[in-house]
View 1 (cartoon, one colour):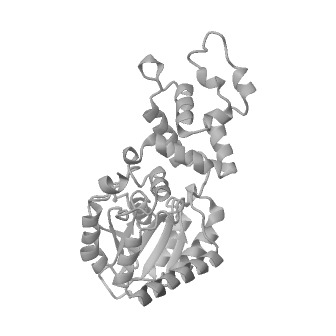
View 2 (cartoon, one colour):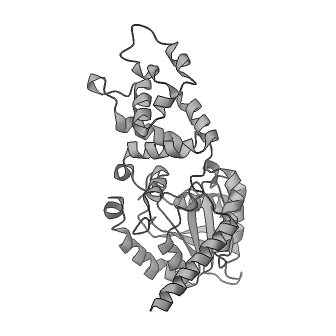
View 3 (cartoon, one colour):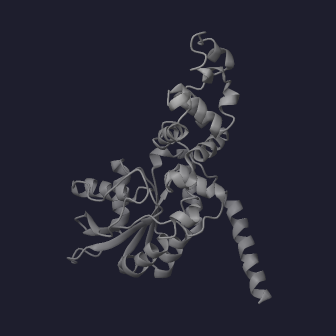
Length: 337
């Protein structure tokens, strides 16, 4: 359903970008989400960048929400797979030093100082990876200009393909393009990583299902799980939860009888406990599951569970093995023909 419902219209957008803006751009800035450095790769965008043979920068945005211990491995992995890429940057759009690094990288593509026309680039990437925020940050740092590119916390905000001047000397302008997903997501895990970080509308993936996947991810990251439990108030053990109960509110506070193991058993049990704890109830005392799940996702996306990386970055040795396997497969397919 995610594939068919959401990305069907993106093929037309991709073709428009290919024929008009990528073709006319002097350089490309591909923005990825540092929390999902692999899942936020769109192979079709990569292919489009390569076929035009344009200078390219890969930017891992939202670094403030990502685990910084993954920075070095992510950059090395990306450089190894993309030797044609000029710059690979790990950026927080509200960090002025990071934005100056990006300005410096963009300036390396600029015309010489005798050109009066701006060097024009295009920013591309998946939905909600922070492309428009990055453009506004460039304008703010380089030109002290107000925000121009429209931003939002949900995918599908960018509608226009208008260029924005982001630097005066040298003169650089950038097209802000709509976010596009690949037409076929490779697997369910990739789809869910994209969903819980906001690249796919919540109603397509299901709010409770996203919480269930988020919980699974947190269980594999003890530090993040501990931060999460503390932030939402999961009791440390059953005795601490039972000690606060009174005989007059057993029905309203049944959630308190849950042990941490029961609360964190599944997305359903977590949403039910969280909804009761925060009195997110409908008629009859039934938990408003969608509202409770949306609140949990909002807290996660704001980084309140701490920095996190939801992908596992292969080692250089693993990369080499993958490349050798891929080459062997190509050779076998060619020989079969």
